[in-house]
Amino acid sequence: MQKSYRIISYFIVFIFLMVNIAGVSAQNVSVLGEIQSSGKVFIGSSNGKWSPAMPTYPLLQDTGIRTEDGSASIFLKDGSRVDFSRDTVASINGEAPNYSIHLAKGVIAFNITPAASLSVTTPSASISVNSRDGLVRKVGYEKPGRVLGVISATEKGTEVRNISGKILVSASATGSRQLASGESMLVRSNSDFKVYKTQLAGGAAPGGSGAAGISGEILGAIHLAVGGTAITVYDKNLSSGNASPHIP
Image (cartoon, rainbow, N blue to C red; front, side, top):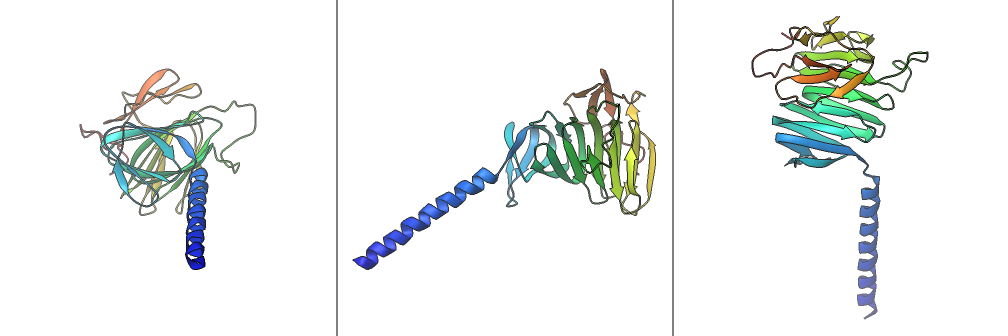
């Protein structure tokens, strides 16, 4: 009888420990914001399992996003936003207000508030927005504003298009280089690179301060609103065949 009681006691203790461990694990998972998606989009968990995305979904740490014939947007707690065009695979991590994205392939457009920082890694480059290490953030009279840009990653390389603000691009071939508003950089997979002016559809010029945000429609092309002016940035996935002229 005593042996039976001992086994039951051990079992109760085991259940208690498992419940508490699960509770602690749940408490350690931070909600970074919200995911909104349309079309064929999948959400990946930390265990590698992909599930069809609901129209609205909480954004947790270490969440994967895979868009096929669809698009997704993440709205972060600090007011920042990142849009994912179709045929994009990425994962999001971090803790507010410092976020990180691993972009395996595809195109993202970002609108980052002055209070937040974003680091993006691709197979050929690392990109920092509002870096906390002081390389990008500048102390002075200039009032910080939102940083808007577009990053595309393919097997041929990484293209970073700066619409507004300052963006730091790092690669083995280039070292670290800061892009000002209106500058773009292509880092090819063969370590070749070049810097050029950001090209926008319709001949519009990049805006400076006063970025209003991303309009939200990135199916086919990426549309940004900068300084009250709507801008379209060429997307390599555009169905009409228009693509960035810098990615062969």
